[in-house]
Image (cartoon, rainbow, N blue to C red; front, side, top):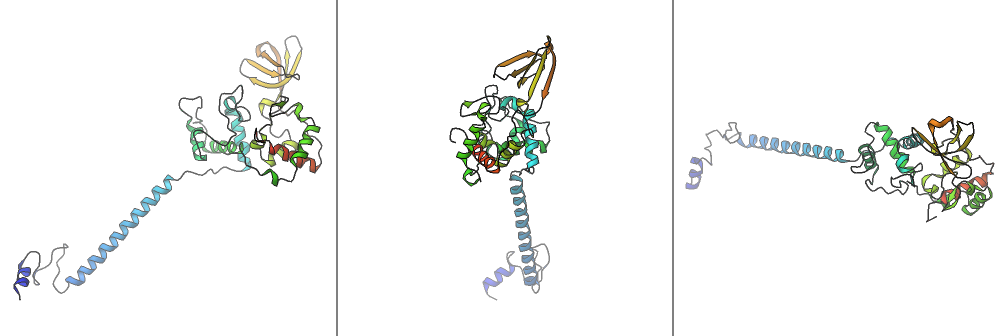
Length: 304
């Protein structure tokens, strides 16, 4: 044995062939040391793989948790239910058509761009929690389904439809619109009457299928703003008009000459509300119907 070998054999760093190896907490003889060492090395490798797998699972779980929830309520029925939620909870600030307006202080919701949210999950949180420092109060008592349905409806207020792909003609539809004198009740780009909804941006709020239904079934969904109200005053005279606004004590209507009339409810003998549209279902050929839908779908504000 050389001096170097003897030194290692007697040193604590180099165990004697006859002495048990305690480096791994078990006794290893010189014969079984190599095999046992390999086994322990394999066990260590497996442990490292397991630890890495657990880390990947944890990391993956965190990634999944960070993903935004998807809206599970996006059917046509959900759109209608969202519309009802909007009509009952949101019109006092955002207007009956979501565009705000003279009597509303909320922002226009029909542009497709929202100041405090860029995703549907973000809209959900704004509706649920509200916006601090503004008149936007959250709907904390509403259920998840109601809020998601409201999100779905809000998304329908701004649409991107390829009008050229529709079966009708925009110009022919404009001619039908004028022939039927629709402007007597509806305003388009500042021209027309006020006895029906402003149609200047209707193509951004309503899809072609909805517009088609509006023409054939005008009474299917009538917002309270467009109900006809008939009041009988104490002297027996009757005044009829469109419902412009109402609270516990007062009622405002717009008569046939587009004059605003205000009444104290306590002074009235009776109030009747007709929840139907004043728009007639005009008899149209299939071609005229398609043309009118195409024209209405093209109305998107100043850019139309």
